[in-house]
Image 1 (cartoon, helix red, strand yellow):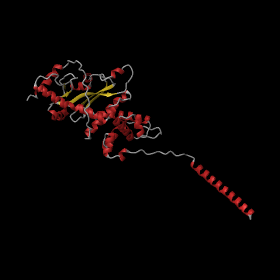
Image 2: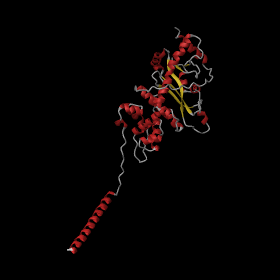
Image 3: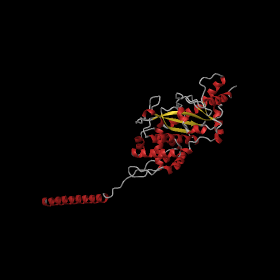
Image 4: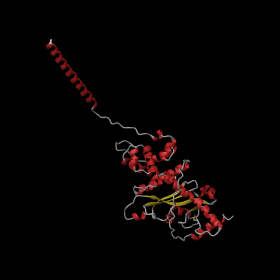
Length: 364
């Protein structure tokens, strides 16, 4: 009886070992089938156009979805093909989204890359290519009115404070940059002591930017920038009936009127008041631009060419917002840099005569 039980236990033990061996063989076969050709799993990125409401998209990217799609269609032919570190193609839509987020937040490119699930190098390439593409189409978005179009522009300005014949308000603001290094680095140091680009712009009564210059260092005087600009060459022949309004840092010309430094008569005081109220348009424009695009308030760390493209791109985006009636996020007015005037007697007498003629219209 005992011997029989012993034989049964031994047989049971051998059977258990056989089952265990069989399971191991099955597991090995299963693993053998799964081992070849390990598949790469690619996660789908979130599409902000589908995920966000119109209000949420506008708050994050500073454009409506409709405006975004129109800009995307316009710049896509100017965008070279781009791929991420996995060799996957980065769509033009994603490239534009990454760039808009970078311009709006002013964050480091690495931070923008992390939130977009791409490498810093890929994000940097996207941003550089997109701002270049936007700059290439900027002529269609930043355009000074022709003599035939100035009537509507002057009428809009006149509604602000009664200033007649104004076709634009001109001013400059400083865009901080990282120290550029090199022999000409100190040229970029402004009077406030930091490195900057002196951005000069003209806007109309709706705050639309109609002329832009972004290639001067922070130490340059506003008057020097204007005197060497294409805009002065455009206005000087006298084809326009109207004039620009500028601060006291500019010389007074028939086509660029400044306020009286020392008004003597009541109508000169009224002219100065109307001048200040009207010229505040360019101050408001700078304030809105810097509030919408924080990249303009933190030192730009990109190369010189990219710096110019970034500034131009933000102005193009601003103009798209103005033309499409998007909220402009009013904030503190941007400071207009009133440089120490550079002596310029050319056309000074004619400028004073023109100013006196305009001021005379304020005699009550």
